Image 1 (cartoon, chains in turn brown, purple):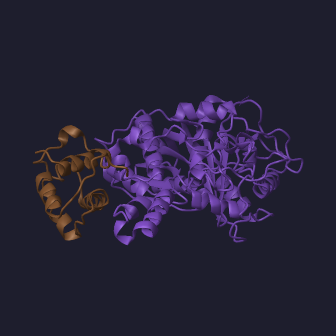
Image 2 (cartoon, rainbow over the protein chains, first blue to last red; image 1 turned 180 degrees about the vertical axis):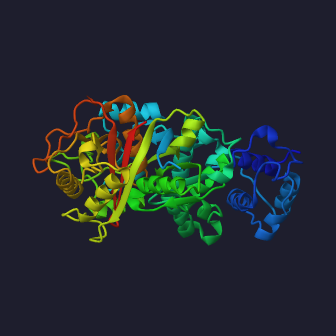
Image 3 (cartoon, rainbow over the protein chains, first blue to last red; image 1 turned 90 degrees about the horizontal axis):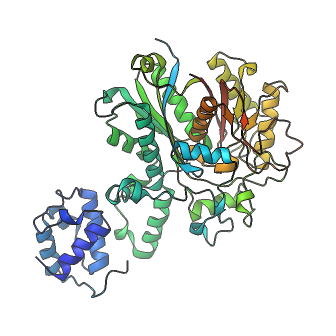
Length: 87
Length: 407
């Protein structure tokens, strides 16, 4: 899987959440990556900050694989700037 | 059951160095860690004693570090060193018998402040769900329990600048009562944030020597004008001496006594007559079963504030009837690490006993003539030291005094 949104999600997981790059794949679940429910809320906040879309707490609780997450973000119209994040 | 308490492990992360050896060498050097603090830019008192080379991400990994306020990071790294030093194995010990009692005055001040800025600038929906678990002071003991499989009694003591000493005293009691077989204890603090330093400045508690930060912390000196705020983590591993002997542990020193009291006088100023402090010292000596004559050295609270050092000098003279053993304040080097201070100074007392060297008080150029104490300065003083008294006094009037002795 390769899309700007996937790449951004991957970057967030590595840079902000300290996940090792080789653990990350479209099929990986947040649980596989040792992210708990508090991390998921943090992830939703970071996604809002970086991609301009809001994931509700209910949606955040349902997030499973990175693939599903990217699909949800894309459905919501997530946009990723061409440049690397300035945050 | 003997109530003799053995200290079998030490861990230190202080402005004098990361690790027990580096911290001890730093304290012996007599060079103050006081420096300009870039994080305090714009604050009138922009100096501190930071653990300059401590990077939580480097020490703990990004995944763990981002969920931990710096006060927990400092405490956890010190705990790792102390447990390794003790030779105990958290993988095989009976976790139900292992307690953790840490002291902390402020908790996650840095997390509070950055998240408050987020609240004001971006709104409540951007506030981190990790704010509460990062800032509550008890979390350092919680994280120690999680990492080291310690299911026994677990708490954090908050008695301001006495917190670390209080924690060690409580830990002793958990061993004496038989509630625990091992206690991971000490103190941690990381409150060098713009808001808290601005507030300490408004109290006129801090040294204003911003143009000469390395000379700002000068306990017992005639020209002292306040303390220099510091951050640190210090951990000691305590066990009953017979248990330590049975497992063949290396005992660094013994915790012989502890006394606590309250000034019941003023929220921040020390009682000039030192009634409360005297009670704590007397209680500590009584619990150790010794008299003032048996004390070889005093690691003073010695904050470098005009009021503390004068009052402490008077109380020591009263209790020791003018015949006082050599005194030092390691805060000249480390600054005042608040809730960690009592713990790191207990560790320095242990090292003083083990090495037979009393560290010098930094920046003691001209001793205050009003303070009639034999203050060690200039260079370490070699001496046979079997018994050390370590003083801690906190805002709120809470006092804690530890007595440590050779193994």
